Image (tube, rainbow, N blue to C red; front, side, top):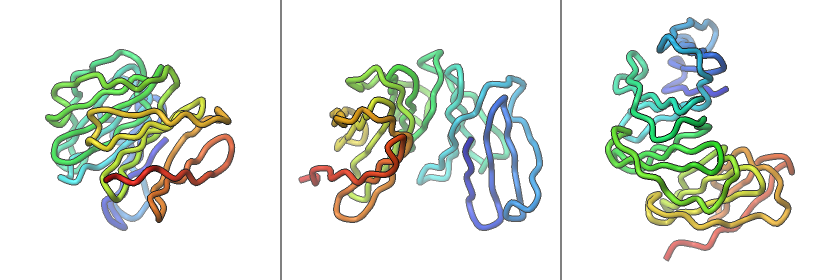
Length: 193
């Protein structure tokens, strides 16, 4: 369901039923190395600026590695439903998001969580940090959430077509590329003052 490479050779992949794979040769060969005994889906893996790795998973599972994926800690979860995304922020801050618009923020690398108002019940599926520091979280029903305070609060920019958005990428000129059921679409977001 997701792949992360720390360089051209070292990579990790996560997937359904607890699948966790590692490669040391750029993906020519993969080894299965389960990170736990549960077989929950592991939906997304992301690396923080400090080098920590985070995994967002099914049934409220959130994992963190402080050693490039060699060992993993299952973090306390604020929610029993599935998380589809994780977005490391500045310092030790991190967001997780998923079903029914659930969005949580941690200031201490996932040891404690606070709920953040998402203004939606739509499933949240992807997130990105913009070059100017703003955050964008996207989801089903045309959901676009924007934060200019490092994820402490979000504004909803509901897209009128209500098409599912699965992912987002920053593009030049303060725009974000939305990727989903309607194909791709550039969205201009007000520049942070």
